Length: 299
Image 1 (cartoon, rainbow, N blue to C red):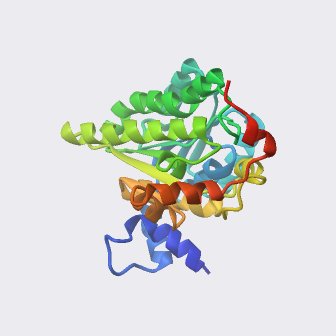
Image 2 (image 1 turned 90 degrees about the vertical axis):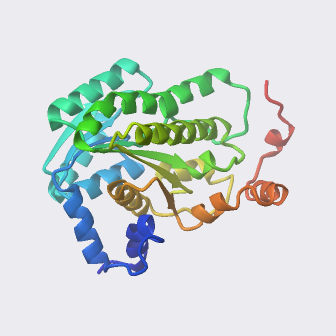
């Protein structure tokens, strides 16, 4: 039987638009119907939220092109997607720091899927959860992976998504709305995503181009990589990757502009500028730093 948490996650994109919500079974059935036979490209699909999104699309009966760097992990995800009901699953190994690799991924997706209905941008480059140390090369590389590759893939996908009245789903973060310590490079890339895709949404609407853009603002999620980074830095609660993935899939299918998960992310974004000094004090008190970090100065 579906949990209350499952119901809340599925319903989150439409809360505020409907006073009476359908049952979780009925809501998932409606969502699955809208995604049946959809042609979906998911990046960063070998683990974490990307892997869980692939499984949700598979349960709905979608056609999938999954991309990541690790072949062994992707093969395992492919096998499970087929078991869950995906109509077809193709794989593309790619390093998103390479423009040539991104072009090959898009070409393969269009060939394998025969078009595109959803472009789900989820991949991220590995970045340390630490105070800024002045490493310009690192932030330049991270901007290429976390931001410019999103722009490149979306630009290549737009003609195909325009033809299908499709959707771009962009995974972002609360750190792309509210600045936090230890995320200088990562947060910069997420703020950039917000600026670009929010502006692009305006331009598409002004041109009457029927492509939706959903920006997904996520809090701390219990993926292995995230937990390893923050374990000695903060005691903030982490929320399930499976539920976060379901919220993303539901939001994309509903064509909402922005989605917030978990529950606290929306109010934090809403009140972020109300009491800036108190806000910053609370943020800083939520994180721990080592004695070396207290004394270090960026070079």
